[in-house]
Amino acid sequence: MYLTIRRSSTHELEIKKSRFICHLSRVADEEQAQAFIAGIRKQYWDARHNCTAFVIGDDQRRERSSDDGEPSGTAGVPMLEVLRRRGVTDTVAVVTRYFGGIKLGAGGLVRAYGSAVSEALDEVGLLERRPVSLLAVAVDHTRAGRLENDLRAAGFAVNALTYEPDGVRVEVGVPEPEVTAFHTWLAEATGGAAQAVAAGRTFVEVPV
Image (cartoon, rainbow, N blue to C red):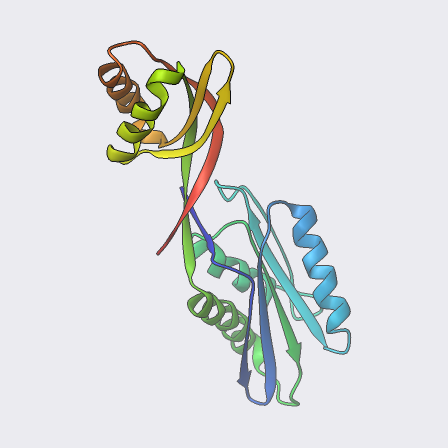
C-alpha cells in the first residue's frame, strides 16, 4: 500500500511579496509528470521560476527535482523532501514563483518551497492505495446466485459476473493479505466444488 494525493490541486501562499503557487497532480509515470510540468511552464511562462519535484512508483523508486534557476538545492530538493517525508508517490509538484522584489536568502527559499508543497498536500488530502488481488471463480449456473450472495455477506467485493454457456465466472477482489484465507473460505462455502484462480491485480483507494 502507498499514499498519493486525492486529486489535482493548486495552492498559493505569499512570502515577503513573492507569490509561491504550488500545483499538484497525480501521475502514473515519468512521461505524465513531464507533460504536466511542461503544461504548467507554458501556462505560467511569465514567472521567474517553475521549480519541480516528482515521485513515482509504489516503492517511491523514481524521483526527480529541478531548481529551475533558483540557487542549487533551495527549491526542488526541499519540495522532493516533503513528498518523501509524507510518504507520497505517483505525484508531481510544480511551484511557480513570482518574485516580489525582496530576496529570501537560501534558508528562506528552502522554507518557502517546502511550505508551498506541504500546505498544498494538507489542503488536497491524501489517499491510501491498497493492493487487491483479482480472483476468478468458475461455478455452474445453479450455484452462481448463492455464491454471489455468500460472497457479499462475507464482505468480499464482487467485481463482475460473466455468464457463459457452460457456467458463470465470478470475479472477486480480495485484499492481498487475505488471499489465503479466501481460498479456505471458498472451499468451505462450496464444499470444494469451486476454486479461485488469479485474474490480475488492482488497487482500492481509502481516504486518510
